[in-house]
Image (cartoon, rainbow, N blue to C red; front, side, top):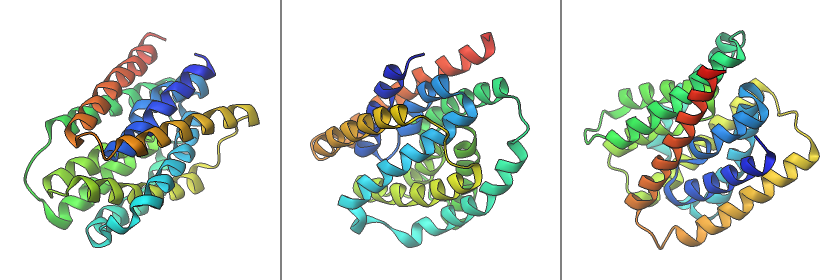
Amino acid sequence: MTLAWAAVGVAIGALAQSVSGIGFALVGGPLLFAVFGPREGVRVAVVLSMLVNVGVLVREHRSVMVRRMLPVLIAALVSTPVLVHLLSSVQSQALRAAAGAVIVLGVLLVAAGRTRDLGPAGGVVAGLVSATMNVLASAGGPAVAVYATGAQWDATRLRATLQAYFLCLNVVTVLTLGAPDWSGRRAVVLVVALLAGSAVGAVLAPRISHRLARAVTLLLAAVGGLALLVSALSG
């Protein structure tokens, strides 16, 4: 798997997240894991995701719902260091398979959706599941997106609040996992791809429906997750 394909995944993932609030790791993660391996791929995905989070928050920070985010965030932040420790000795191939399975499961959860608001208790559960998925595959979005759908957050507030949540969670994840060990060339190529995707997403976000953006994101994520899972199981 070449760096060019990873850059394509990063650009499309950044575009998806800028438009729908989730999707960067779901779409770009499988290609990053293929290029860097499961452990290093998570580190790279988390750092790049932080840049996307900041980019979206710069234009939409006023829409963040801090109180609604707190139960989810506290549960995720507290559990992340514990999860990193528990998963540190797992074999790379098993991590690849788990990452692919987590991405596919996340897509199914978001696609299924629900309409019932489970309140703060549901937020704590969503935070725990999200932290687990973030450590495994840098894909903590689906669990929180399902919770937010039930709480009936509107599209703009959902997008902004998810970025604030992910930024906090990603900072803790990087501090726990450590920074990625990538070359300057790879870093430059992927950051440029991310900026290009984010710029296109910023232009498209006000012009396309949230439903369409989510459908495309989920389709791309499902294909990527299945490819990662199959490659791990057949390797």
